Image (cartoon, rainbow, N blue to C red):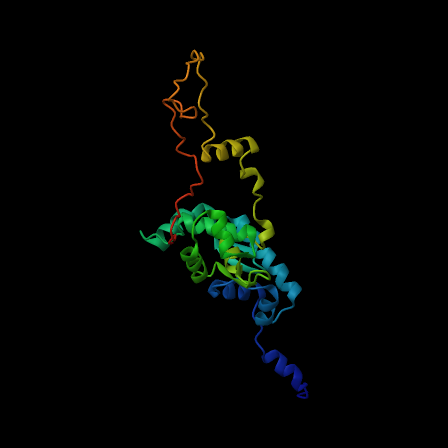
Length: 247
């Protein structure tokens, strides 16, 4: 009667955590997105069961209108506060302090996101200012990382990180919005280029041509017409360097 196999006793002695509460507990304390394989290895359940449980939890939170969501981002799962409560969360986290990126840092990060992998010199050329300081800030905050070297110039190349994907709530850079709807029309672009080059305001022709005046023998034939002044945009001037942006 007492000849119960030892293996059965050992199996019954092992405490197996319930799947969904176990996933919630792990995700609650994690500071990064966790993929389903890693979660499955921790809770001791099959990967397929973990995937189904995660999707069920995400749907349940959305249906109940909780103050947080469970999202699949950057190849893993993580809790996020709901967008409609962003103001409350921001007020609590910042507590009167400004921890956001500057406009210069956001513009630089956008160039890297859409042009990656890209060199620092290329980013500077696109923005028209030196971006060394901003790039250091983005590297320090973990939003940008090195991605090898350019084969021709040997310059360091940069790309966005998985942390960047987590911060904006997407799984890959393929989900970034298209730029075309935000670009100016070609006519507007030509007008802008003409304005920068000083060609958008040509001198108006006189209403009535003055009567020809006989040149004096001592006058110079190629003297500049009276009242004519060179355009302030003429010449090969350059736009002032923006200096190093700081974030």
